[in-house]
Length: 471
Image 1 (tube, rainbow, N blue to C red):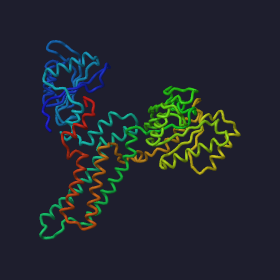
Image 2: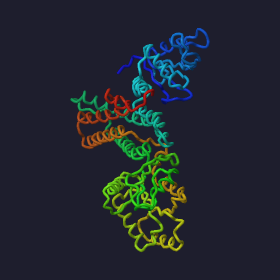
Image 3: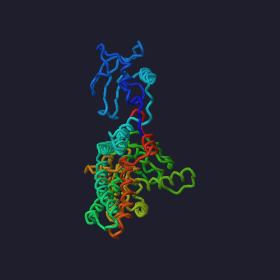
Image 4: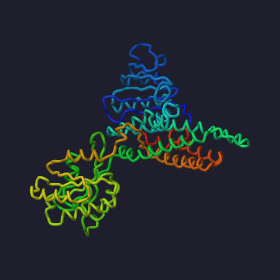
């Protein structure tokens, strides 16, 4: 794919602001901008300026002044796209933005497609495909964790790991291919012992990257936390306390929440998506029944479950035992899912009942994390969020390990691992070089899909269509 025309787009967010930045990229970018630019300093042509320089002047439509602007000049190949690039910083009036873009279009530029500047950066070798995708993740990052992962990938951490494996495998692949040329002599150019060690290293790295997707996916999309329990125990009040706003309707009427309510907050740099669910109970109400069914769906999707109970009700004979039985059923159904047992209305529980509750919880063998709170007065909320942070496994992030967040990369890694496993079996069973070479080529193909050595227009179109225009 070779793009030879010059494109233009608004690079800043649409709307009124103090300034706006309009970006031009392509072989005629500097010429087109120069035709509309009148320098404050007389007879100053943008064509004669060095790369990475700023120039103050007026943007003109023939003899009509549109705005006083600051023009940045970036000459190929030392620009984001690898092409001649101009960035025009103007005042943020919608009228000014539209006028400048329309004038540039009349001068011969074309409106950029979504993500086309980054697409050109990829085509011109400024970024590989996984780095280009990380640009979109960086733009959409809304927490410290998602920002950190996107920055690590954009700077080539993931690409370097894949490229290193690919280079080593290509070296052995060439020796295997060479053996095919000398098949009649029955010689081995590729040391099978060293090759097996390489395959083992590749398997280890691929498995680690694949496993990291479980962490990366929740970091990118927010860690889902389901708030569940019976009606009227304070689930909506807890959600409001966590969000520090009146997000959910709070009422004394049982069954007020009939659908799930979701909202997101950042805790210690990580995004959490809290889900307030319908109260679990027996009901003949059709709408409420649907809400309760959704509650169980959200439990299965959540990474952490907060099981909330009304502490004042626990003094009723058998109530706590019944609740623990329900929690046991949930743990049996989802054995790996952390459950926080939250006892609400701590301020209304008598010391005697607190002692009884603590004793029963101590003697049960569920090994529950139990926290007392008062959702209404926000007592214990900080303790709850601290416990939540401990439960969520983001150790890979803290250790600066490579974390996979992209489902396309995850799919390619799974397929690459499947192919390299076939190579491992081939070495073990002394399979002929020609058959082994097929599996090696397939492994290299899936590595290439990640970094962009192997690609097509449809793949690029799908990836860059998700970008904003102007990036």
